[in-house]
Image 1 (spheres, rainbow over the protein chains, first blue to last red):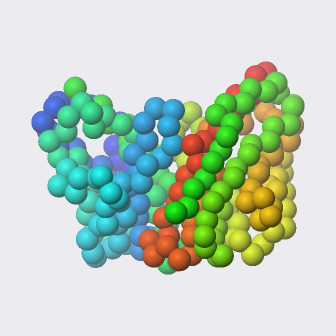
Image 2 (tube, each protein chain N blue to C red; image 1 turned 90 degrees about the vertical axis):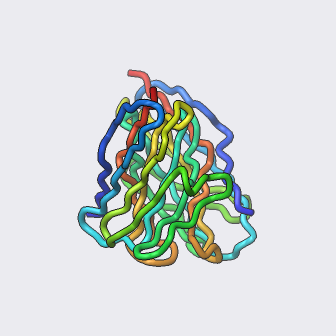
Length: 116
Length: 116
């Protein structure tokens, strides 16, 4: 149980284009999903917290107009990187939490974005 | 603010050796949760354990064991008789009960390399 998927697993795009990444909880309903960014050999950096049916809460320094997050259902959240640039190249990981409070976060396999 | 420190950036061992990963945390909350995740080369974070601040009992799961000591704010992780498949980056993380978003604060990670 507690499986989270992400799609695509990797994507290469041209500078200036937008890329959408999907995060799905496969066998449970996720009231909250989180989006992280990870640079090579570094730890995870939380970008935003996404609650189903409400606006995402972004961490300080994360541009909400750049990284659009939609959590339209209890099993799906999407992250859209708008007008991507090479500096947006990174490993993006989502996680999903089943309940409220401090229930464990289960992570997706990640999406590697390369912007040319 | 909460903080998690993993002082060891990389540990290299030979197969069958034991390896202990240190994790020290800082928090002003009296109720909090500690986690360990494994990130193999594939990139997906695998949940290993969750421990709440009121449960100081050590835990063993197969070759894995955890030593939680509130007196020293540490939550160390030991792999006994290491195997090549244990090669990965291991992250310690903290979540505070008073944090409305119940976000995870990650340590910097410890890369474990198990040589045959």
